[in-house]
Amino acid sequence: MSIGTKSRAVTFAVALVAAATTVVHPASAATGDGSPSDSNIRYFGRWDTRSPGAYVPGWTGAYAVVGFTGTTVKLRQRSSVDLYATVDGGPWASYRNVSGTVNLTPSRLPSGTHTLRVAYRQDAGSYRGDEVFQGVSLDFGAHTVAVSVPSRIIEFVGDSITAGYKSSQEALTAYGWLTAEKVGAAHTEIARPSVCLYPASGCIGMRDRYFKTGLDTSTPDWDFSRYQVSDVVINLGTNDRGHNVSGAQFQSAYVTLLQRIRAKYPNATIHAMEIFKQWYVTETKSAVAARNGAGDGNVRYVSTEGWMNPATDTADGTHPNDAGHRKIAARLAAVIG
Image (cartoon, rainbow, N blue to C red; front, side, top):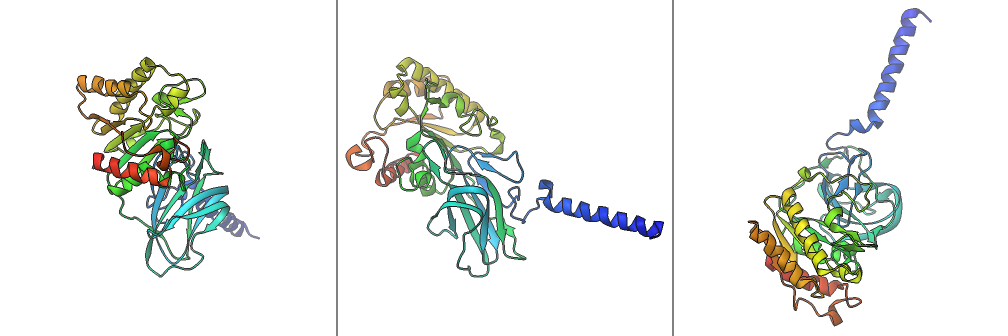
């Protein structure tokens, strides 16, 4: 082989390697390709996006929305996970213990443009399985498209009640999700079981942990510049009583949380809900009054007395069942409008 021929061969080989690298490197993600960093995919809730090829939802109720062309759509999952998905606004379908390429359209869709929503299933204190979203796969020649999503975002802060523990589809059938959908808003639920307001022994203190991307302290601080919400709805205190948090501790922690949230969301209306067991009522009202007295008139107390009957509207005397969540959502939607 001549020197010139060898040179051309080496150049061609280098070009092939470069092309292959371009295909697989995360930086190659382009709008329309269905990869996690595809800008046509919209994420609601707190997602850890540090790895371009694998996005991880934090807290509960996080979901993704994307439009796509073609007749099929498949999820790319790293390992076994439980999730929910809906196509074109149909009923949420449940997928249990799925992994790899997950076919969400075993029967082909009509040709055209469609919309997919995906949410991962939460079980008690964590998501069920490996909740790593690696994008979507489409028909040959198909691509993702941007879809219209609500500009208003409502954030719900709470414990297992807000997370939908004991309801049929967890966050999807919990009052926060239902309330936002009723008023036509997008939403995020910063909630998990075993959460207190005050950081008590054996109970995660939302006074501080609210500002993390996920439940674990190892997750990064949340970047509040990603989006601004119109409303923050707080429902905390049910677990504090069981962890012997005093009234003074609770009230002080509530004032601190309200101050910190206001610093992150200057224009949001903050709603402090009376917890359904009517504990810490005086302290919650006093925390709201303290912020009002400090000049923040956009913090409001929400009385919940009579919103539901524990005997018929809860699964265990504390956690609402589906009917209870629907009642709460109807009342709360009327409050926040």
